[in-house]
Length: 201
Image (cartoon, rainbow, N blue to C red):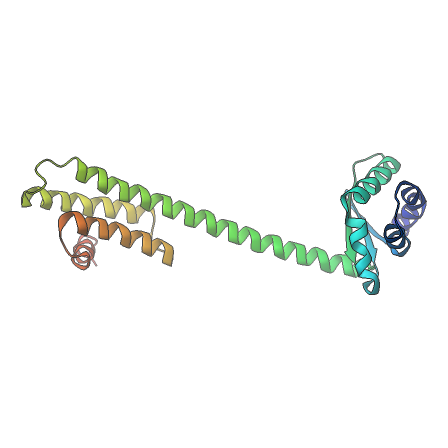
């Protein structure tokens, strides 16, 4: 921490010369270098002056700090301004960031799974529609019965590809059952019953 504080003490006057505004200068005067974490320079503002942090986060000021520190270190640097001036403050923020990232990844994974499930059941739904459109003499009961049998096989394949694991999949599956029911003039409950018989339930 002493090294990064010495670095900031050397660079900060150059930053002051490159910016204007009482608020920015006050923020610079209150700032303390907390860490140089890989390519991230962490500057802290005391909790009782946290309202000044926004001045350092402004894009123009942030860019100037990153450029001057980067020139000093001869590498590309990113600036992170935090509330608090201790290493423990930074560690706590990193833990919070990691948890936020984990939750975001969980949400993204769930969203992808839901999108995939919806897409798969949409395909099943369209398969049923295309198969119905291909039937000749739709009014004949024997043809509708054969279509009904084929739909059961399409639904079985759909369940094998996309098992019902959540409410969204359940609703998309039910939508397909309703489509078969509408085309065959068989109650949707009876369609589901015949499908369960086909599945051995």
